[in-house]
Image (cartoon, rainbow, N blue to C red; front, side, top):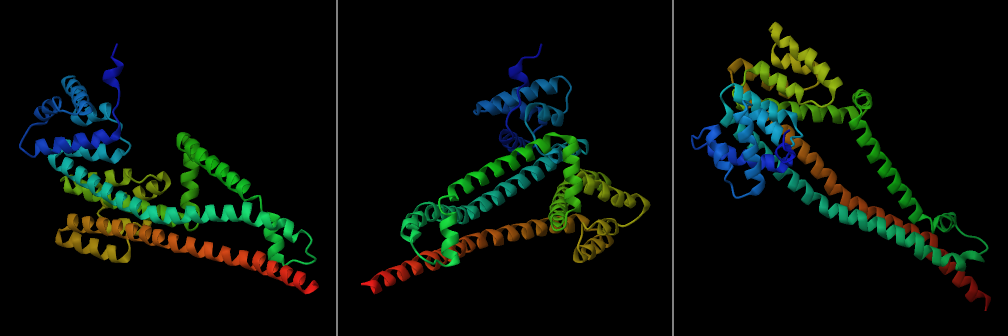
Length: 353
């Protein structure tokens, strides 16, 4: 019976740390078996245990890619695919370097996005909190004052009718959010539901644009990584297609890309399914003609990442001002619905004396 401690998989963050150390040792002209032995004496207990497990798996005849899959939780299938392809083509060091460099860039990009999210999230949360306090406490306090008013503006009536219910609405919104989160988890676990989601997502207007752009970015990123590892183009395309999450869109792309076996140029295979723009089509066409496909694919991949980052940055920059504008508009509504009638009541009372 295998010890459960030996078969335990380590979290993904240790996988990337292990890969980084492995790449460093291999870059010093070391062998993979020697690198694993060195890491089994590492000061980090998790890395040490993981390396001992990998060492045992290698002794059993497993390849390094199989040993890594047995040892670590790896959420991205393309990582192992590229690693395995690098192993098969005797370009393991290149595969390691390409994967670790890409992961570092991804982590840096994610950190920038998190930093961008902080300010708009605070402003938006403060706006929601302010609206809740005003509706459920401030306006509610004026209900007795306006109770005997003969005539109130429509805005005032609306605010008074809705006051005291904002907290309940926010709780309902929270429950709806939890329900959708639960639904997403159920869909991801159920293959039939997931297939249905993939089919609908590629058919829905506007949302399908997001799916196509996301798939395109993943496709070119994987294609660029694969080519950097000196993998044959046909195998690179297979890996790139595997990285497309939406299976319906992936099947469509596979049918088109398969035409490359019949002598069709890569750019002509990718254009019908929307994986390249007119500009990118021209770039790929020239790249194939002059033999610098790897460089152009990398440039397209980097440009796709930059476009995605700019789009997210633009949205995040708009959230803050939009929240302030929303809060300002709400305060103006309060002024029109509460303060103005209050002055009218005061004036009528004053006129009565």
